[in-house]
Image 1 (tube, rainbow, N blue to C red):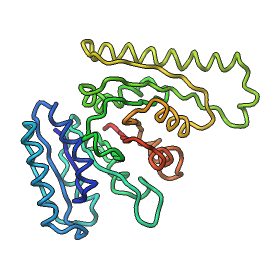
Image 2: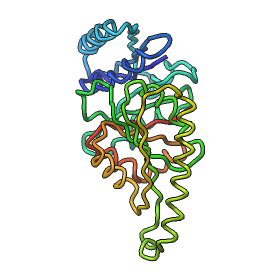
Image 3: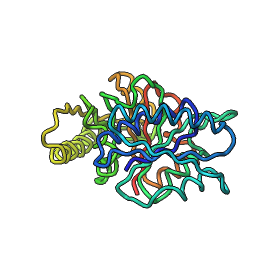
Image 4: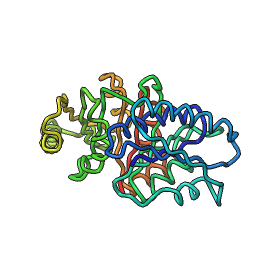
Length: 278
């Protein structure tokens, strides 16, 4: 099941295109759309947007199930109470800069949803609405953990059917004070470690999608600034989406301290998905 948290805005429609695209490849071919009536958007506007999304779903053979929710203690809690406990489901929501701040996640509903445990969550920053939720070129930065690719697989598999190329990126972080003293031999060792990890990911991917006509590119980079490296690679490769998988621990650190994640969301020229599994 695909669950959509829609805020009633035009931006929410852009995010919804990903949810609809995902649902078209699901077994149940259904989107459960949730909107909390908090008063910022008139109910008539929400219903008009939902009617438009319903027509888009009908064109793809997807069932659209809208549900408006009364505002409880907060938007986040109202959504949480309505989200079914289904580990196989995927909740799709949007994240964008809030008035008066430059933060995309800090204190947002999306950040709180990313930390819930009813089901996996994908928070999207959409900067290319013309893609209609169907990117063909994907950049997938990996942190080197053995479970890193498995963590993003529930989202990756929903994107895979429309992808032409996935660029696997392993950024090996080096402290700025150590970079001048990093010998060529040590750099080579680090690159071998990164290459070995990406080889395991490629083998895992081939096993999961044995018949996919998907081109897989690999890049290993030693850098003192992983967010900037991710952004540079995304620009150089002209990708349409960056998919970042995070654990609850790393998410909390990056949101609270503004490290990395916010910089990618703020400076990106392509869509970005931030994913956390159950």
